[in-house]
Length: 129
Image (cartoon, rainbow, N blue to C red; front, side):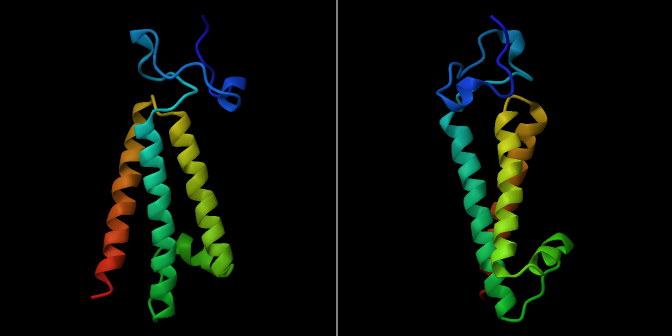
């Protein structure tokens, strides 16, 4: 049987492969059904991204300053544009990380983004004190 491609018809109409079938394929292979844990971490990062967007807008309205130059440029598009662009950028990144979940760099990226966004939301919460 041929390896599962990055994109296949099964990805849209119900997957056929949830796990690695051969041990030598463990690193760098694709599946078209994703584990609950991968989906949990992707949703967690998406939720933290929404929280970051919300708290950024709250702090800016209270007189805060955006120190991230990319976010500052996106803010010039307005409130809706900022939230939309941020969601699209993070959504695309999460899609790429999910598709490549069996690659060490993607697992590292998902873990790093989980930790970074969680820490960022905690930081936002500490600014309320």
